[in-house]
Image 1 (cartoon, rainbow, N blue to C red):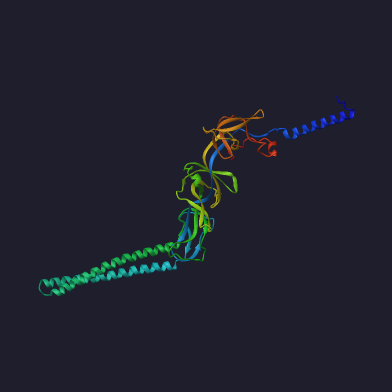
Image 2: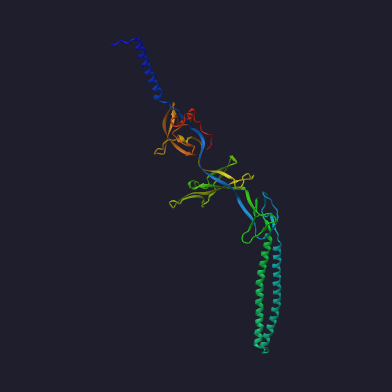
Length: 402
């Protein structure tokens, strides 16, 4: 047996200690399993809704372009931009000299034709007497048949002239009525109660109305506002008249204006873009098709203005005080429609199945499978940065938040 010296024993012991230390370090740094931490969210009660989102624009409930039906210079404008007017109120006047002269000319023509008729009636009376004499004389063989026929012809011709004058008088009276109407058109009155939202023709400008009426001012009824919501073709099959709608404005995101969807326009409003490739003589195009959904909201204080942009929500389903979890907590969907979720219990995840209800893309309603306060796993340290695992996921948001 080899006997080791004291120095050799010390060296051997040191080598063993070094090997043991190296082994411990390798095990500690390369084979120790890191403890997994979980990001969780509590199943909480909240108001949740499923809705279709759409961009909208505000329009006046009724808009009327008030125009001129006659030509002439705009002499006087009696209203200003923003004025409220009543139906029948005088808005503007067009120089009426031409229309007044046309009326006088038409009236003079009627008087002339009536005078001609009186003349013909007097002549008719004379011819009637002459015809009567000729008939009496012819009965006694005191006048020729030719004279009787000539008297008869003169009488009939005069009667026809009077009938022609009657027709001309009717036509002239119509011309007088037209001239009076044209004269009345120089006084432009409000056709509805409303607000002046634009002035298109200023005082002194010449109005020419040959084929279409020239717009002078535009009136709008602003006590009620119509919202035109642009609904995509992917969502339009899911909505129908009568659904609850609300919208917010870009300048006032905290106020909601509620109403009911009145109608969906049958015709689309399309916006499209297309690109083409000339190298292979092929072309591709993409088109987004939208349909306008219409609803009204009261606007008694005229706070809502025409052409404002609205962020519209059309509510499909809603649940009050429903048990909900983040949508990201849902796992695989099973054949029976349920979903798997991981619930943290005693710092260890366990898999459960839940039946989901409505969702809004962020949170989903849980119909069964969880209780209020259960902590569902939405992530862990193996899939999220370490910094994100240091804090628990907060509870659900206030009711109604999306």
